[in-house]
Structure formats: C-alpha cells, structure tokens
Image (cartoon, rainbow over all chains, first blue to last red; front, side, top):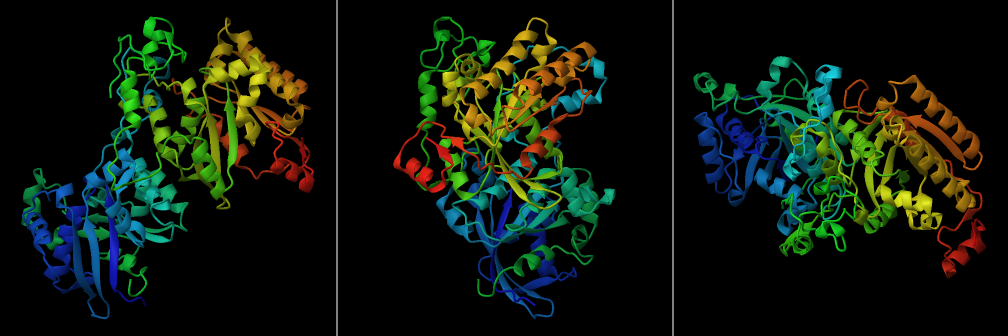
Length: 287
Length: 339
C-alpha cells in the first residue's frame, strides 16, 4: 500500500472546464464530514483565504468565479484517509484556463510554469461535458440533407483562422502533447481525466471512459496510444449538481450542499477525492 | 492580422500582382493568396514579434521544415510518403481528410498517438468546416514560397500496438509540373529520393472535364516517365501508388470509369517493371454531396503506408551525386552506393 506524502499535482484544463468549481466542492468534501469520501482534511495548513472564498460562492449556489491569471495561486491541503493510515500534503496550483489557452496560441509557457511542471508525476486534467459541438465538417452538414440538394458555392469571404477555432478535443490533446517534449521530461505520468458537469451526462447512463470515447475521441485515442507516458483513469464529476445560473438554482438551494456533489469512476465507491488518491498512489514517498 | 481584399499591395517580393498582374503563387482568385493585400513590413514584423525573455517556446505545431524533420528523425524512424500532384489535384485535401478521420475515432485499424503538426493540420482543415462560414468545403492552396514541408502523424496499429510515424510531404503543385517538363529539376525535389512511398495524384476533376482530361492523364504518365527514365536505378527500388482523386466526379459515368481503368492498366504495363512496386487506387477524400463516405478509399492507402517496410539492399544511386569522404567510406564499407 502506498503512503501519501507531499505530492505535487498539476491541474490542467481550458477555460470553463471546471477546475475552480472542483476545488470548491473538494474543500467542502474534505471539511464538512457530510460525505463518505476516501480522504478527509487532516489539518489546516497555511492561508486558506482563496479556497474559502471560492467555497463560499459554491455554498451559495453561485457560479464559482473563474480564476484569472492574476489570481493564480498554489493551494496546499493536508489530507488523510479516514483511518488516518495515510497522511499527505497535496499541493496543486489553481491555474487560469487563460494560461493554457495562451500556451496554445503563443506556443510558449513561462519559465516558472516549465520548472514547476517539469518533473511532475500526476496530472488532474479537466474537460467539461457542458460543451458545444465544434469542428463540424461541412460535408457532414450536407450529408444530413438531401444528396442532390447541395447548394451553390456562395461567394463569401471565409472567417480567418485563429487558434480559438481549434476543436476542444484537439486543444486538450495539444496540452498533453506538450508534456512529451522539452522543456518537459518525457516520463511516465498518471493523468486523472475529470469530466466536469457530469450531471448533464448521468441521464444517458454512460460510463466516463465511454463518454470520453464518444465526445473526445481524439483525446481517448491519444491517451490509449501513449500508456507508457500517460497511465490514465477517467472520472465523471458533478461539483455543482446542476446549472446554478438558471432556474435550476432554486432546486439546488433546497438540497443539502453535500448532496449536490457526485462522482463516478472506475470503482463503485468513487467520490470527489478518489482521483487524488489514485494520483497520489503514483508518487514515490518523499516526493 | 487581416487580409485587405481589393488592395493592390502584395508582400511577395517580385510578384506582378502589386502592379495589377497575375499572382506569382498562382492563386485564383488573387485574394486567396496569403501575400496579397499585405504590406511587406507586416509579414516581416511577424518574424520579429517579441517573445518575452522569460518564456520557453514549444514547437510551432506547423508542418516540419528540414531542421524539425532532422530532429525528429534523429529520435525515431519514420515512414516518408511523398505526395506529388499538380495544382489542385487534392494533395492537401488528402492530408486533411486523414487527420479529420482521427478526429472522429479510430480509422483504418489505427488510432491517433501524436502529431507534431496539429496546428498545421488545423489551419488547412479549417476551410472544410462549418466555422469557416463557407457552405462548400475548400482547402487552402500550398504556396510556392512554402517550399517543402512535412506533416507528421504518429499512429498506433490497433491489432498489435505497434506505433508508426508517418511523414507526409507537402509542396506546391507547380513544382511538380515544372519538374516533369524539365526532369533535371527532379533533383530539387528531395522528397522523391527520400521517400518510402511515392504517391502520384491523378486529378479526378480534370478527368471528368473533357477539356482537361487528356492533360491530366499526360501529367501522371510523364511524371512516372521522368522518374524512371532520368533516375532509373533509384526509382527501380521505389514503391509507387497512382491515386485517382475526387472519384465521386467519375463514378457517375461508366465511360469515365472505363477510361480510368484503361489508363491504370496502361501505366501498370508500361511502368510496372521499372519500379519495385506500382499500384493504383481511387479515393474521394471529401465528397461534397455526401454520397461517398468521408475519406472514401483512403483507408487502404493508409494501411499500405504503415505496413512493415521491407528494406531493399540492392545498389542505390546516390541522390545528389555527393562524393564526400563520408560517401566514399560508405561505399567501401557497404558497397551499396553507386558513386
């Protein structure tokens, strides 16, 4: 059995992929004692201002404010298993999605980021189920109609390409591909893929890995084809329980805070802390 | 950065378009040329764009130039495919259709493992997507000034887990037209001499057009003749596939299908013995009507490229007539190069 020690976990995800909301719900899971989670808070450690502020918004069923590049901060949480057999400090940065979008656009990262992530073994990787279909080929649209009814070529000036036109799944693959080449070291890493807004998917009754294969097929292929670099597991997490910006908010407010949180994964007893336990098992003691 | 359609400026040095002439890059309409409507200073300003000193650069994600190609080949073996065809024959569309298939899932028994040129693929695929605002798919034209570049795909073969790196060449079609007309220029097309596979495209749209048909057949036949007559020793070891593109435009006429079949048989009879392997196939990378599935016929092509390579150890002609001490050493130690 692995021992949890000091584990640095990289948190990677694009804008709106649910990183900060996860942090808020994780804080509630660890501190409230309302949820049968694998991990609990062991001891307060350092300044909790930031995590308390995002948690406060989460408690009010408000949209948890996205992290801006100016607010990026590293969070340290001392956790233990319920039996207190394991103790560890989990350290992970709450990085803005804009940081990762800039990487894709400028094909560069800061030296600080490169140093911080260079030797990292564990990655929490976020994608959201609350996404719009993108990258649709025109021929697929034509195929939906009558074959003989392809319209004339309209004399229109096409939109100009920008990195924002790149489909989400391709952006996700690019972010992980960066880890395969300098300035990062190519090594075996564990990647916990967290599909946020899982409440949108749950009614379909699909497993997280199957969902990834259906909605992010390039990402699933990439991970499956690089198991020597990325050992991965896929989790579905619902950190808010629903859409807090619409009429659903009243329903969520009537629920207990803990019942808004749910998670599914490779084992039936998955909770919001399970991805962290799985990642931490990868780290060698003392790292 | 915007393209000022209607402007008479052109940032391509020496292009007559700036004086109202035709596009040196061969773009029609002229506004589709990436240089047209741009000030020279704007283009050169790009390369001077300041990167903060505390930033670390990743690879560009664009098609690989010689430097990036060498770096990759120092790390691992890759199968090189030279895709040659004249302007608008469908070279770039073939490339983007292969990439596009992996966006939807496993393709032809392969899964996507990595690409160092995703940004390049994305840029070229964009005009085929709804987001472009077009109602019919289009593909940007590869410019003469782009020179030779390679697209990269690393694929995992589902059956055995083996991973294969593919390098697919991209170059403006005008260069191939010039080379078949003046075969001495073939030496400039280094991709032909480095290739594990040579793919020659027969433009199906030209075959379907009675005015263009004979010229289209002639272009492919003459390219094969230029290769096998000018460098017989090298290309006797070559594996060549002649691919008829846009087959959706031909399928509607049995007469056209018969013509293509007859042409293919003639090629096999004439050049089959002059190459190590010569085959023909037909594809519709992107049938706008949707009758044929996307990348129709492309799966067989891909499987051909990723099949294990049998290394020919017969004598080979040194591609560029190099006679350095290293070449002489190679000859002495292996005897496999003819100087």
